[in-house]
Length: 488
Ligand SMILES: Nc1ncnc2c1ncn2[C@@H]1O[C@H](COP(=O)(O)OP(=O)(O)OP(=O)(O)O)[C@@H](O)[C@H]1O
Image (cartoon, rainbow, N blue to C red; front, side, top):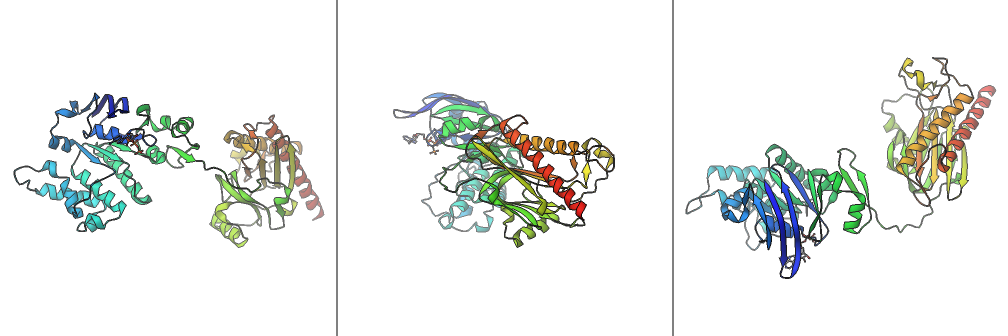
């Protein structure tokens, strides 16, 4: 559809575009990225024929752009630029109707029914129909943006070029616009080339990204290839962290602000409160946490950690909502808290603080084994769930990798299974040695400050602390439980 070959462009003596080549297929949505001044707008102007390159060619539908007459080009390419001249006080409908210019013929450029239909349709699609009789000067920045988009669509182009179209748009209009553009590209084969400053929107919506740097193509590939952490850091000269969109398979770049906070981030036993109602840990600054809690499950930043005692007969339709209400009643903010449940006596909780060169680990455990299961034979069990019985908390004063988060879980689970093996705790249904209980929970939380700990396998320095601490804490908790049972 579009073939750009070896473009060179300069404003007087200033070289802007240097040897730019790329192709865009029909129906593709391509994002153009690059830091300020990298040449994005200049490239768009060359593609749309506003600027003529000193060298190189732009072919549209296999024909050099110079061979197109103005009207003919307008039927193929529409441009939505950043800065639009608004010297005339046209109404919205008039502005959108101007988009039909290329389709009108004859001396008086008379409008056909098709023109009217098209204008109404695009005004409907872009949500500007309701203010069609207002003057453009009376509109907000976002409303104007949608009017000019409607004008571009009214051209019924095959290619649309957009220069930062989400500028001025609020969140829902950004999403609507990009959803619509992508739908038009997929369902109507509209070819879209769009400049983005927001790398996340570009990564989420585009089929392909072209990253410009100093007037050259740094990389032209799929979003997951282009949006590499080190590349973006280097080209944009800023600190970012690559992550992933939680719902769609798209890379996302998170800005990392400069740190100015002065709070001490260390979790030690003074943060723990143990009562018959719950075990809680409160910290002043959120910790990066991986958990299987009733609330706060998955990865997130949390500053409250609650292991709530519930009765063995606890049944609740919506236990998540119940837990959130419980947290609120007790002064926790649910969105900042990981909440777990257990039927064991929380006052029998155990903890251990292990200090090592450059980092430390606080472990907190509640354990009961009335519900013990041998994972090797779990298929023989019914799937009835009892409240959690071995809950393990691992707080790391250090900076740990995502790998170390997961390895901590593995190491802790192995240490737990080892306790049950050494104490010969059996699965009541199968008579074999249990490996855990059916509803165990775990959390690993790290301050993400200080020494970097990449691994937490059983024989790494962090893994050894986790293994030792979990083994000791569960053992002590089960001793307490046995003493309590023997006294009852
Ligand atoms: N009319 C002009 N005359 C001379 N230099 C210009 C002109 N327009 C742009 N430039 C220069 O060309 C370079 C590229 O500008 P361009 O607008 O293409 O960059 P961009 O990547 O779109 O930037 P931004 O992200 O800031 O919109 C810049 O250094 C700019 O100052």
